[in-house]
Length: 176
Image 1 (cartoon, rainbow, N blue to C red):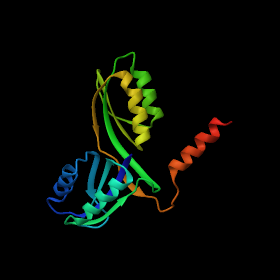
Image 2 (tube, rainbow, N blue to C red):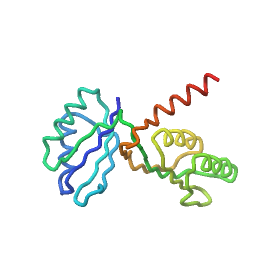
Image 3 (cartoon, rainbow, N blue to C red):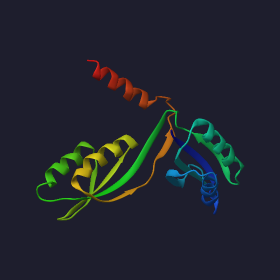
Image 4 (tube, helix red, strand yellow):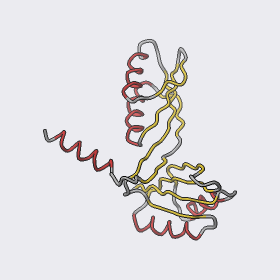
């Protein structure tokens, strides 16, 4: 199972290197990594996606706490969260495909950030499901390049689990 870890660290040189070294020594691959300043000066938030079962992730979290400069580690996988990713897609276009591609852009509320006679560059922000869906549709147009930030996440204070709401909505729509 893929887990999302939110790690608060002191913003000092070598912190990310120590974390990635810990993962490498234990044979873990980090599927997604995003790092940036947190709400307090001198503190950074690292959001990682890592594959592993619950027991293995618990051990990994205990190991993270042993590292210098680690303030807090949370497995937010099963918590109500807001998750977002930013992706840039450069897609090959022709005169024939331009209008159908722009329809996809509108449906997914993507932004056209560059256009030429032969390509269109899109900016897409959303949850991982939205990113996956638009990438599937864009693949029929020949994707030339992709740049992806990795997932970021914050726990919802409202405690509303939107995944639960999506699943409930889908259940009611399919049973009608």
